[in-house]
Image (cartoon, rainbow, N blue to C red; front, side, top):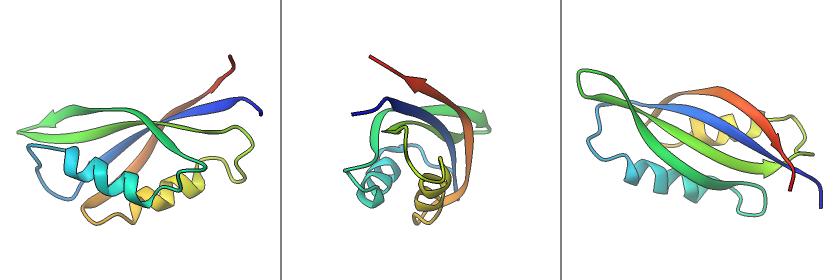
Length: 93
């Protein structure tokens, strides 16, 4: 098995959400479990109660197209307005 990659995504909800956990569950539901795993998530305050969702996603290094599929899958989830890749780093244990 090759190394894994940690992709950190900033997910912008379509509306102000006090609790982002339901959105995380929706995203988990669309990600193929054999390729992607949400290692961690946290809310990031933007302004006036609006929060972005920071997702830390583990994926295989040899994923074809890099983070493109991940961005597309997350971006199509109901309630998601926009997705940005903050950074990607290779993990080797």
